[in-house]
Amino acid sequence: MNHGGGAVRGARPSGGRFAVLWVLGLVPALLTVPVLTLPAPTARPVPPRLQTIPLAAGTVLASQVPRSDRLAWVPGPGLRAAARTSTEPTLQTGQLATNDYDLLGLSWDQPTTPAGMTVAVRTRTADRWTDWHELHADSEDGPDHPEGRGGTAPYFAGRSNGVQVRVDTRTGRLPAGLRVDLIDAGSSPADAQVGAEVGAPIRLAGSSAHAAVTSPPVVSRKSWGADERIRECCPRFNDTVKVVFVHHTDSANDYRPDQSAAMVRGIYAFHVRSRGWSDIGYNALVDRYGRVFEGRAGGLSKAVQGAHTGGFNDDSFGVAVLGSLNGRTPTGSTLDALTEVVAWQLSRYHRNPKGKEQLTSVGGGTARYPAGRKVRFNVISGHRDAGSTDCPGHRLYALLPQLRERVSGAMKAGLIDLDVTMRGSRLAVQFRSLRELSYSVSVRPACGGQSQVVRRGRVDRLAPVVAAANVAELLPGRRCEGRVIVTIRTGSGGSGGSAGGKFVFTRTIG
Image (tube, rainbow, N blue to C red):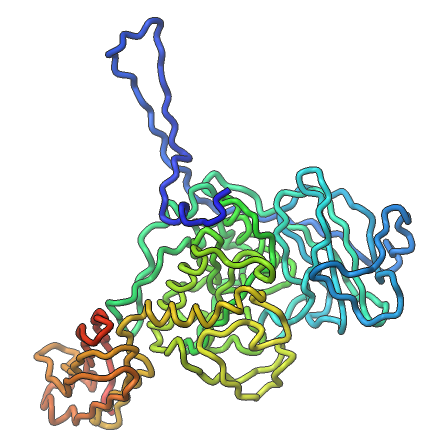
């Protein structure tokens, strides 16, 4: 087990390559031995399999479980008891034999969660029963407007063939349609190759380009085996990204490198087939080995609206770490990957990683902020900042100040708070920079021609810059149906020696 994770990222393991030696009697010492090299496995869709076990009241109540198999409802580490006078849970099953599965969760008919509901499970994994693990039962994850079924967080248990469940509620009544959902995420020969051959990194796209921050290598949906037939066809898009919400999946931590793809597939299947969502909720996921997985379909180079932070999915980006980070500190490789993907996203939308931005709650998933409430968040926030949850885990949440510093360093001479407006033929460009640097602002007709410099100079860290010009006077007779290209070039400079960049925008006059 590689607990640090650093040796996996960007490595090229030999899985999939085989040397076949043909030995013919007594082979002379200098005889050349033929070697046959087989190609690496090709990634393919892996259809998930779902097994459900109904947990209707009166079917497997705790009182019906043999006392020798029954545990008193005394919460252990990390478990919370609901506010009831009874010392036993509302429901506790026996040790149930199941088909093989990798990931499980509970779900119920209504998209909301009963007040005070507490859920714990243990699994038969490698022929041994594990300790109890609490499944967080809340509505904080998910779409802004509750849809589909309510449910717990999914839990990746590894290959298992048994489950035991206990549930407590304040009222002693179970939600209608309560069931255990067991996901067999399947396997692919390509799982062992994930991260070794991820293809060309996704590059920046859209209205701007920044030479100093490029995308990290990303494991695409195709590479982790997403079955695209089970999701809805068309993603929704936000106008921008103002805030990055950091999550954890609250699953097992000691997974192998070749299990990460199955974890992502299992979460995808649980979100879609068990909860009824249109797709996986997170925009991106990061494993303990420092690999970034593409989440919700639509592309990481676009502002895809996710279902990760109920009430605040508009103009936000959700990235989740695979694992439980309440009692476990994320690996250095995880923090490196988080830094890269967050810096990439914030540089694309010119956000200050140590600043704040305002979002408006649409209600629904968030229990803390009603619809219409305007809330100022840190640009890099934890899920718990938006809802009543301990996500992204106590250890990771404590590291968010460090993450903001790391992202700021990775963005180098990034321009922030960038605004380019056209009123009639009047151009106004405003921006600030994370570092001291030199700059120039120029415009040229979209149909070609020479660029004209509007303003050049040096800017101190975080000092505002405003460049204005009358484009009609600057480029007479070359309006090209009212479109001009605005370019901001930044150069190296300052004590930090920050790298330069180039930002290109097309704007319409009038």
